[in-house]
Image (tube, rainbow, N blue to C red; front, side, top):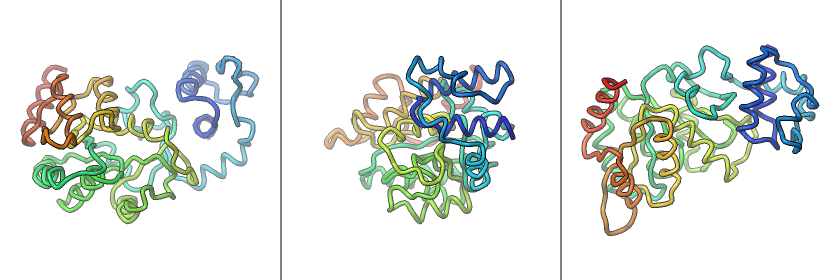
Length: 285
């Protein structure tokens, strides 16, 4: 309990960044000590202070824990692939079937303003991906994300959504029914407690979890300078494969995918391209 409460305290404290939190966690783990005063941790903040650390009393943290289903980075159920990324989330709040984290995942990202072409690619790819027992990981955003979740479900597969708000908030509202369905029969994850509203910086942070959970990242219809490219770059940084679906050169909707292919991503025209690449990686490693 003491370890969990400390990690929850560190996770929900505002005013210190994820890198600083990671350093504090590593320090506590090295000492195997899970109780610190703000004065003891102050040196880690380079004089900036510990934000609202003092506002979180033990009683308040226990109440928070009792009202959430959560795992910490010290939990045996924490996904091993997330431990390998540079700044893993210290706490994951969840609703649904946590055992889905034990299965091989494929992350899917792409345009929020997806076209019929992007929709058609997912409709063609998803039956075969489900036959291969991939769990589809995405972000419950409009467009490709939501289509990926929906096609996984309609093809009798399983899917994981990673969101940038508390689990009690559906954002965007259009994904509300989908999020509720996934929380019941699949899995929805967040590193933010209930009541956390959407904020711009939450979503790049959310993307690192999406990139970390998949064996690779499939990109469908990504413009240049899009969030999908951030997720793809994170996956590359983690040593994972990026699979990019080429598209039309006329509307710019796939310009980011074409750039990824030029930079060395796997050009994907069929599911077998993904399977061959992942099999090759397994042989290498």
